[in-house]
Length: 190
Image (cartoon, helix red, strand yellow):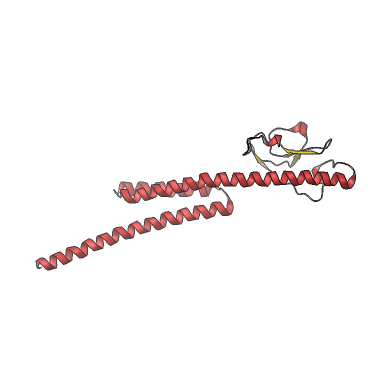
């Protein structure tokens, strides 16, 4: 083999190695992108599920550790970037979901109060329970103890349950939750 052929052969080999590295890099970019987009779509479609939180973390960590053991520091760094993006998505989507849930609860609270007033205007009396008002459908709220199974309680039975509190003596509706909402007030004080 002549010098010229040897140089050409080495150039082709170097190009193949470079293409292989580029292919592996692009595969990693694709994997990180697919996992990230899957997480994002899962969070947007169904909210924050345990699978949406934990599965991608496990994928990034295991893949990153495997690549680190093989000495592929650049690719393991890409896994680290994917992990950071994933954790950022989790944090931001948790905030967004919390604000959405808060807005829905405040809107429902206002609707129930308006419905109680309308019921009183139409019937000349306050309803004895919220279920007596045909226009509203109560849905369970989420508070510190999780999702409440009881939809409506009396003021004397407050216990941070996440239920709707209805006082039939004056028609006041509130939420049985001592957690703070975004403006800094307790839910029970709204």
